[in-house]
Amino acid sequence: MTLQSFNELQIEEIKRYKWLESEKAGKDLGEQAVIEWIELYGEKFRRDYEDMQQEGSLHLN
Image (cartoon, rainbow, N blue to C red; front, side, top):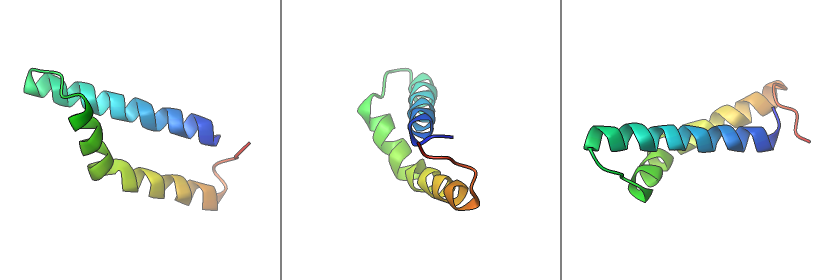
């Protein structure tokens, strides 16, 4: 997985979270949901990426 594809995956996860949380709230949560995802999941997402790099699962171009 390239860094670019990993970033795209992260963006898709953020969009998915924003959509789900907005559906639950019955309104578009917009930036609030994005910030919430970053606070709740951003660090783990980055750590998982770093772990995959160290294991050789990622190939950066």
